Image (cartoon, rainbow, N blue to C red; front, side):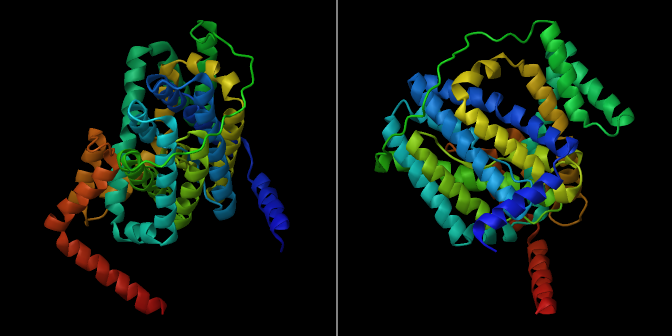
Length: 414
């Protein structure tokens, strides 16, 4: 089968799974990914003194190539793998742009992409993920993702009408309207109320189409050490690790090495447009992989929809940013929290239903919840490192038992 025929076959198979559940999950994931995270990039670009064209080029690259990454991985492996970029990485590089030129920063981004590619190509990432106990990974997922649930509650306090209507609609739709995705119902009702109450008003529309502006990276050792290395760690140990854990929690076997390889390639290409990273996305993968996306074998269609919206958003970033800025924050928080419920429940079960690695899972959860940011590396990485240290001290016998079980499994399958 030639390559073109195979691609057509994969797309044709995907359309069989394209239904209300998968389409709505992909749309909800895209709404989440195109709102708050985009505003973080816009704020970082302003703080770094970037021009409007440079900002649009940054947005174009992370959404366009991130969307393509998610579509490719989802179609190839038939798993709901959403692609985007590192939100924590955007915060990291925003501060660095005050010390380095954009070309020097782009050189560091390219170096980070190359490092991620090498770690994936050598299989080191996959070997590390196989060694880390599943309860610890699930504890990290709960700790990192739980903020979406708590922010949903605080959103109801801050905006009872908008966020409260989303929660109530979700509960009633889950109970009485089985055929319609409850998260989509919640989004539609809350958005309608926002329009009626005039809390959704678009201002400052820009009708000018801006062509993304490529640039040539400049490689600075200082920039690579300050930006590139922490960024590569974020992509591998925070972003891709979250996606991997979420897919595992939903019963998939994620292609860990391929996720790293293609994240590295995407990040390297995006650097030529001044974009900091391209990688798999934890929150959007969680939404696309949730039970509300429909049957397990067809949920990858949701990630394809999400990726398609991201590609369009990237191309027309100059036009759609005003709509992003107009979206009430309370609605974003409420919908994100509701969309994470299924993943949080399954991750909690996998983290604490077994008798092994309970101390490690607990520390992974609380470190993830802390939001600690040490040496410019965010909480998911430290949740894994800290909990492994705790388990190696407190639960060493569990590692020995895990190794024995793996050896027995390999002997039986030989």
